[in-house]
Image 1: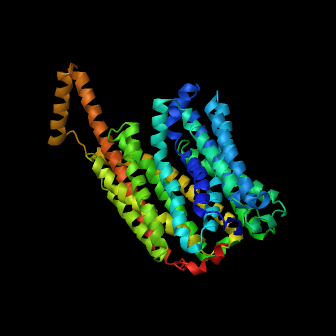
Image 2: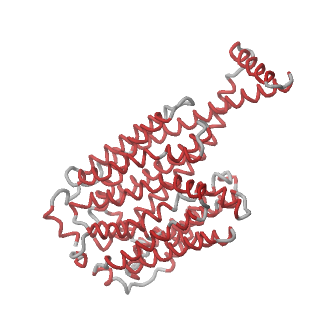
Image 3: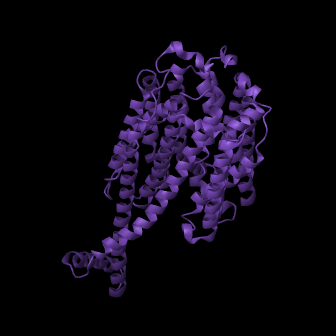
Length: 520
């Protein structure tokens, strides 16, 4: 990228980082505002969730198209159009008078924001010399890891202090600054200009939109509709599988594919995409589980639950710069394996919590887990993209980010389903061991009955309330067992990925400043 030689790459990094952080933040910042959105727009909370689903579906469809769109329209032009569209859609979302219009504006926001992550990652990888890419990816990963953690806290504060509409308005100054910086400091590499005259694979675009859209809908709404007991979910799952298999066959054999799949011939890239999918699965799945556990079982208010999630972000924020330096000096595969191992151990740590857990019992495993995420994201991206040629970088980063998001969607869907099913199963198991004939149960029931009578209830009402309270205790214990068993399962998934790291090739350019010509 010779056009960048006169511009400090860190200025370019800052330019694209604004847009990336803004887009990633919007995937989680709306979650805690849903009840307020529903109440203000005269809708149910279930109906308001379409504001999330519509965004995720549109975002998922555009993600894999990013590399092709950049080749057709130019990377700078596409990035500026995406930032402009995302910022404008954010304003319209904040002004939306009805839920229907909000969903339409969220679709626009998701579609325009889908290109921001892969474009910014491709720009950073090409703007920095190979031996400095670890630092660049550390800076980029700060937004990817920290934004989803900050999102619920920021969303809760804005909604409580001002209005849910400010959740969208905060994007305006960030979008404007990012747009001005991209316009001033970013330039297209010469090979993108040479690719602008390619044919358009309309059939591939159609298969992609149908397949990814249907899959994302299934993952987002499956648990709510009881999965395959719903005819709609079954139909969409069949559509997704048929469309995506057909897409793979079509894209592999067509001359001008909209998604270049031959990049998977690079072994390190293929393994890296698998690992990133699993990281997305565990990261997003655990990020949904923990605040639910804190609020439903440990009595945390929503705002406090969001704050209790902050240590993970703090750990990542502090560790990212260090990992960026270490990646240029040591074999990043070793750092990656270390990150997977530490991440798995901290998940196992969370898998030993109980109903008496305090704040610090949650703080320390999350803080250490944040450092593990830094050890994961930076080396994983660096090793995965090391062998990718510059002209394929945009396509490679778009698929890389797509699979992280799909992994995250699968993780959220799987953990939600496991929690519901295991809570029911453990309630039956634990309830079967609570017998009214044991002295312990009789003593506790008598104590609770006496307490309710002391509060003014008659004998019959006090007995019913004691039985209900006992069942509530069984449910709480069963739900806690379900939570910790899922954390332990996520730990096993993480640790099982460590051997895959050895299949990745050692980066060629690690630590050799003189080998930097390939970046340009």
